Amino acid sequence: MLDLSSFNNLQLDAIREVGNIGTGNAATALSKLLSCMIDMDVPKADLVSIYSLAEYYDYGDPNATVAAVFVRSLGEFGCSLIFIQNEEDSSMMVDLLLKQQFGDAVPADLPQEMRDSALSEVGNIILSSFLNAINMLIGTKHQISVPGVAHDMLASILEVVASIFGQMGEMALLVNTELRIGDGSRHISGNIIMLPDPDALELLLRKLQVL
Image 1 (cartoon, one colour):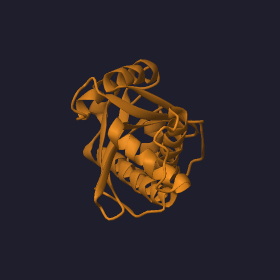
Image 2 (cartoon, one colour):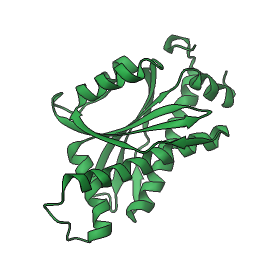
Image 3 (tube, helix red, strand yellow):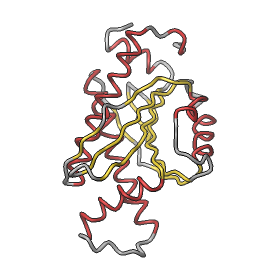
């Protein structure tokens, strides 16, 4: 099984490029969903230890609540995917989707269940599109699970990620980007974490012809 210390620069660059392609596809899908133009910064992608994920976040107060959407991908390239945002950015993205349904009159007292349903839809589109790009790139097929939503402290969410997914693998592809919505006056940040199953990274590198 591969470990972080065994990756050379060519392999790391190939994995980062996979993250860039996946994020670009996700931004395009999000633009269609929200019916507005979305630009994004060149995403920063790193392959990191699943136990060191917290070191790569800068959400200020470690006790602040974040929103996360989880999906599981089954197929030749098996992996788990998580989309994490601070609550402010998450709420802004949900509002954009709700305006597609309610116009500018989004009810202020909309139940949290409906907001989480919208968040689940947005997260599912982003993660599915990210995964589609990777599977098209390497010629594999996949099925994706029903998304789950969680609101908790970042440290608590990452602790759960490490305890559950650490049993399957020790590496995570972390992609961080900032989206500019519409005329660019609104900025929304988000992080995609991809946790490949054992041997999945090896399959990915073989398909990319860098192993």
